[in-house]
Length: 315
Length: 92
Image (cartoon, rainbow over all chains, first blue to last red; front, side, top):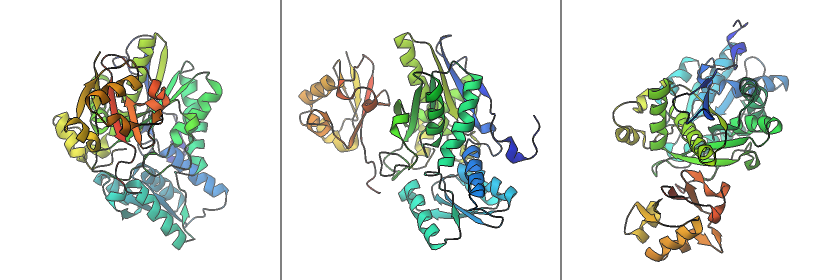
């Protein structure tokens, strides 16, 4: 495959079957490998769509400064786009996000403003909104409320899945900004009768406060509960266990939030088996495991890894 | 038929500090009734006027029961029910 530039290579990621984790020939699980995007995560799609929409709307001109609350992946994607298109980038992120993410952002030339760990992503959003008010010439793309976020999935991720797997019955993804679920969900609902749209949200320990969790005080403007069929709440322990299972049985090295999505996918697979229904379940591998090595998620026993992950944001 | 019920810290005063207890029931409503017979007062913390309390989340095998059937959600042997307060930290 040949592209004119790195930005043009966003999307068209592989969809791979998981023959060992699928319960039967009738109930199959498929992984959408979003870590194969240029900066290694699904966020390359919404970042590019948001930047290009802002350009079309005349908000962004070369030399402009982009401001964004992000726990990492969106920032990394924006940093790559900003570098290639000639913008400055300032990211507001909670201080308890992994060191790899910070180093990557700095490497791509982004400036980082830390918000308190206790406030989680809610606090990062609040700080960013305050900075945007004080600096009217900065452009906040605001992934939690920007329709270009869900449209990126409606126009790219969703069509790719349906083209590769017309028999799809379930789509499972993490619930953060809600953009992936809203975009792919709307696209599939218009074309696949009875398709199930399933959210996997992180359930953190009591040490982590104020999260990007729709029940915990912050509801992204993009969220429409009508698009979802159901929601799973996945503990750090279950997410870690599934992340390791994915690597051990199918060879896929993914980040911890992918383990949460797989956990929900396996839950739906189990229900399909019990009901005697056919199922083709697609779940999103949002990113690879590289950026989480320092969290200790992949070393020692599960209990040790869970303990190390306590107090950290993993999705 | 035994179903494991995981209890959040703030409700463990009702279970003598136990993190998880076993209970029985063909539906979530029956399960909560059975829990209340052995841990009196627990039902009142979970249910109000015939529905789950607003700030209580209940998950069946990690799936939100509000998307399943609420109190009428059917249960099976070996299921795990998790009770969580909807507001985990108190910070907004």
